[in-house]
Image (cartoon, rainbow, N blue to C red; front, side, top):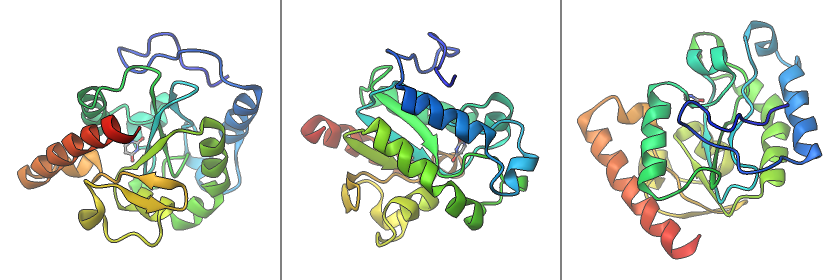
Length: 201
Ligand code: URA
């Protein structure tokens, strides 16, 4: 079962049942040993959010907190992301959070080979969740969803046409923790995301 509890430590609440297909996919991801990361992870990290989200935020890979809890974006960058989600007016159940990589790479070093192995999981998750909008967080997620897009610092803060339809890239919330300039960029882009969501989604 990958159904989130009714209350997730003050974070996302589930609003209803996930499909059997989703549950089977989640079980497959949690049992996955297709790449070496399967041997070093504590938990594969599948998803948190409602079963029919309007918006899905796509991150890069689980870190230490996510590996320990089995849930995406639970550390400091997760707190920043959750604040942004609240600021753009998305209620519990209206959004979801997942990652390109399902398992934590050692030393948090992104692993392109693992990303290729994980790709069918990501594609199937997006197919089953079928959100109205995708928000890639940072360069890795942007490259995964829109390989032709300009670099993330150029693309962030405005809608972009991807093979999956319109997406709205943001810089990674961890980057926003690094400098005042990037924090201001994050805040500005999140405001633009809110306006975009109100007008089109
Ligand atoms: N936590 C995640 O789940 N994903 C990231 O990209 C960063 C932190």
